Length: 113
Length: 114
Image 1 (tube, one colour):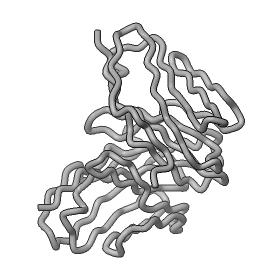
Image 2 (tube, rainbow over the protein chains, first blue to last red; image 1 turned 30 degrees about the vertical axis):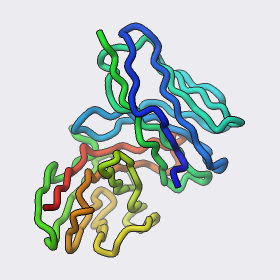
Image 3 (cartoon, each protein chain N blue to C red; image 1 turned 180 degrees about the vertical axis):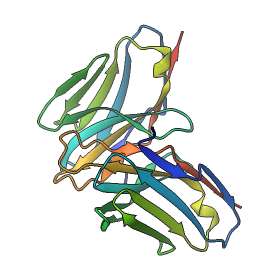
């Protein structure tokens, strides 16, 4: 039972354009959502997060949008840079912050120069 | 200065052997985790310790036993290794009560069981 899903295994965009990575979830008890970025042979690194009481959070080139009614969130990267090429994981935390994060299966982003 | 470190980075061993993976964090965090990333790239939590106390224990075979000698260390011991244990194992840490729920991950240990 995959509660967090990233249905696009890969995405390719041109440098300077917008990258949009999508994530769907099924559990309405999730109260926090996070995006992680992972380079090969490294551990995931935190990118940006959003509380379930908000619908948008922005940090530089990265913006996360949350649509609770649709149980959908997305990560926008503008403008995309070749260094953004990595695997992006969406993760969700259950109410109460037990520390348990449930991850999606990741989307590989390739930004072409 | 590495925040979360794991040793070894690569581990190749035969079925039936017993092996350990070590994890250390120098962030002063109270909570540490073990995650498994399987061949399908799913990253799933296995265990969580808060200040040396087991908090989360997902459905993991008894062959896997975490040990936390102090809050900066969380080791993972695996008995009687099986082919299906081949995966990348990530250690992570976090500080409870922080607003972002952020966890810091180590570089991973790629375990190959032959």
